[in-house]
Each structure stands twice: as C-alpha cells, then as structure tokens.
Length: 306
View 1 (cartoon, rainbow, N blue to C red):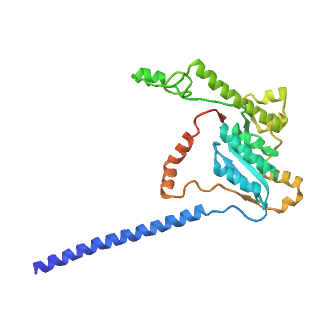
View 2 (view 1 turned 90 degrees about the horizontal axis):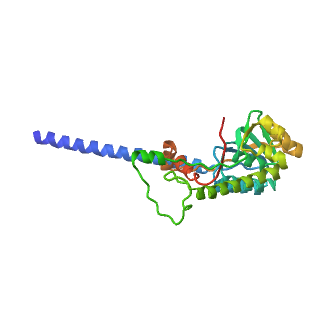
View 3 (view 1 turned 120 degrees about the vertical axis):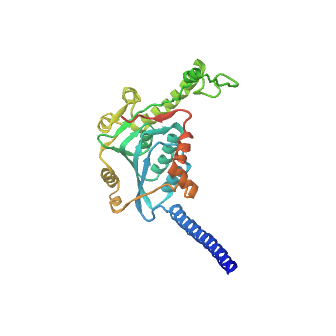
C-alpha cells in the first residue's frame, strides 16, 4: 500500500512539472505572438496617400538623420503631397545635422510650397530649419533666432589633480584629439577650434542673409547669438507673421485656392526600434543616451531656453 501511494505521488509531481512547463511554453508563445503583432503594426505604419497637405513635426535636438532625409525626399517626389507644413519645436542641434535638414527641406520647397510654424522654441538649428521654408510663422512668445555657433566641453583637470589621477596621452601633435576633459586646451588647439566655430558661424550668417534678405547692419543686429520673441523676430525680418497652423493654411490658400480643399495629414518617421530589446532600451533611456552622445563632438547650433 505504501509503495502505491509513493508511486501515485511521484506521478502527480511529474504531472505538475509537465503542466507547469506546458503552461510556461503557451504563455511564452502568446507573448511572442503579441510582440510580433505589435512590431508589425508599428513597423508597418504607412504615410498618408491621396492628395493632401503634409505636416511634419520637427521636435527636440537636431542630429544628422538619414531616415528623416529619406522621408523629405519622398515628400518632395510624391505628387499626392501638395504642400508641406513644418511644425518646429527645437532648440537647435549639430551643424552637420542642421545642414542636412536644410538641404532636404529646400529640395521639398523646389517642388511644392513649404511653410514653417514655430512652437515654443525654434532657435539656432531650429531656425535654420525654418528659413528653409518659403514663409515663417511664429507665436508672439516663441523663442527664435540664436544665430551663432557654440562649442563646449567639460574640464575635469582640477578634480583629477585633487584626487590624484593623471591621464597619459600619446598623440602626433598638440591639436590631435581636439578638446578633452582630461587636459587643458593649448592656445594652438584653441585657435584651431575657434577657426572651425567661426567658419560654421559664417555659413549660418550666409544662410540667414540669403533666405531672409538681410545685409550689413541688419544682419549684424540679428546674428549676435541672442534670442528673440516671435514679435521681435517679425520686426527684425527673421519671421513673416504671427500665428499658428491656421495662418499657415491661409498662406498656402493665398498661393493656390485649390489647396483649401485638401486635408492636412501628418507624416512620421518610422519607429526607431520595434524589437523587444529596443523597446526595453527606450524605456530605460539607453537608446536616447547613445543617440545623444553620438552628436557631442564638433560645433553645435544649440540655444538656451530661457
């Protein structure tokens, strides 16, 4: 009798273990199928079709972005897109990223009307995006301008001296490696970096002069690196009008009354990473961290929000 009870208990334990693993396998399969469906849905999002006015939200810091450039190339070549409303809310970005964005938007403007609508801030690289448009609209209290270039880096040499850490570096010249937080910047290296910043600044000024028809003292007055309210920007020629998207649509309709019959549809970049690891990285802030670090070198077209 004792043997039969023991055999029964052993069989019950085996059944429990089997049931657990079967349940685990089924749950895992359901989760995987769910993630695949979500990824397919997110990755399969299509941009609008049929005749319409495109809208694109340019938010946050501007970096070089090949997917963004490809999207604007698609807009430029898409006959269904009759015009583009560019909604800008950006404090700026890198010089190369802002240059690439400007070039992409000018290709759109070569084929169809483009109007920029500024939000809370459209400064520095954000302003470069705005002047790629044919017409610029800002809120009265938008922060814009900041026409200038900045390069900055931390200097922890005093802290290293205090805690007794010394960085040993072997390099081919005094300017190799650029500014480093681990050593003081030599006068020779500073001159090199200043020349690069000034070259980028002259490029920025040239764009503003060309696109906004500002010369001499008019250009000097706005290209100080300072920011302006939307109202001030209208007064000094950096912005065309005060308003929002309604005013942008009114401007487009003034160019072509037929544009009034088209809906405004939002175009979006594809999701950066629809995988489980990508989603976890986004939740934990890992992906944005690495994306941000990738743009830390070289002159930048940032402005400070105040």
